[in-house]
Image (cartoon, rainbow, N blue to C red; front, side):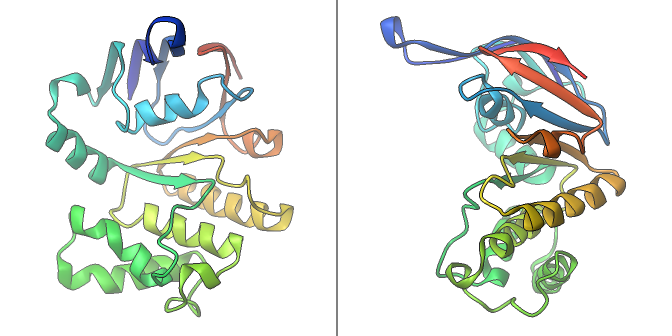
Length: 221
């Protein structure tokens, strides 16, 4: 995954906001990257561009050498479904659906035959410690349990890359550490992780830290 001088802005004229200002970045397979910086620094926009949820307004983004700008909407959607798993601070689960149903949702866009979906969802939920709560609606789960469901859902299509935006922001410290241990395990399995965070303890788990300010990379560690 390589960004070259990527620009992203919203609005126009006097309301124009430059969210990314010439960001260049290369991510190797299996890397664990934390992106930190103050609110409005461009962290979440960078994550959205990496996940092809947003298109750059300038510069270039390539995945495995392929220029993402050359793909149409359907091709980008297929690439996104097969390459990325997303985890958000607000979980984005369907509240009336069960943990199992939420985990099944992305599989309709993935590579696995329908006959394998339920068995795979069961295994994923068991792997994040929710084996006893598969049939419980999301609104009846604790914040930590909902984030575990979100992580299982992110893994539904066996993505190579996990993109997480403040995944521990709504969790207590004990649950945060449990989620981070799951992230460590995913990294050890060879997946690429990109985690946006305000928490220095979360960032410290990563092997590479990117500091952002005013839409630019301000430093690395």
